[in-house]
Amino acid sequence: MARNIDDIQRDIERTRRQLASTLDEIADRSKPANLVDDAKTQATAKLKDPQVQKTLMGIGAAVAGLVLLGVVRGRKKNKDLKELQRLLANR
Image (cartoon, rainbow, N blue to C red; front, side, top):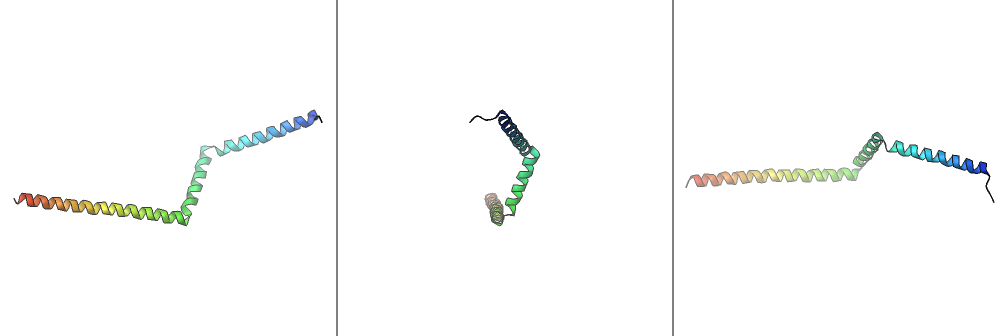
């Protein structure tokens, strides 16, 4: 059954409106300000997650422990070097 030309034109216009609406939505979503806002919202939501908070605290504690270990080892090394210098100076 052949379609009426008016029906075809209405379909074309409806499709054009839908396409224009889709393009407007894509343009709005791809604006840098909107992308930044979306990223901030997602990051904030992730940081509020208790599991993520526990993980970050664990990582922070591990980093602090490694820094402390480095400081202690550095002091011990300096102390050992000074002791060697003292012993060599007394020879």
